[in-house]
Image 1 (cartoon, rainbow, N blue to C red):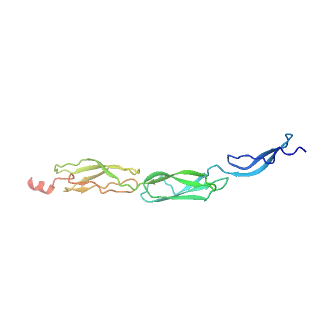
Image 2 (cartoon, helix red, strand yellow):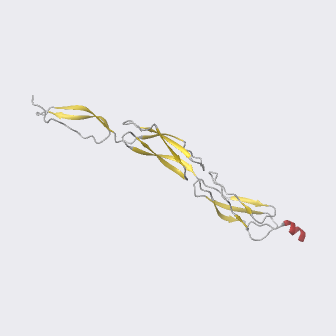
Length: 193
């Protein structure tokens, strides 16, 4: 017998491998592959089913969880949960396997906690009138849920009033309140006719 070429044979496994092979040889060139348990996991886990996300906007906190799957070392948890508390449309939940590989799982959050603000105003005037007056206030929303214009038809004697703005998540604002909302005092107009 020629004997082994050397006492030890080694191989570096630099990719995800559970069972690998190390080739040994003798002094005359005969070789044999030996199965070895490598158990190297360099593959991040996979994002699974998502629960709690929604395409509907809310102004409340939202708990979202993502299932985790990993065919190598396994996940540290079957699912990972995160409580989203601030205004944002989307986010990520980090899942992990048992050797530290991680993956960011994108989720739909749709939280808007920002109140809308007043934009351009049309129909308002500092001039008195005896006619009805329709005033429209444009709505600006930085939270993402969006909002449209709000209008109010003034049909009775009014000098100041309020128009409430509401966005898609239900946030309202302390709306435009100004002396520009004026109408002619019809009772005085009738007495002067």
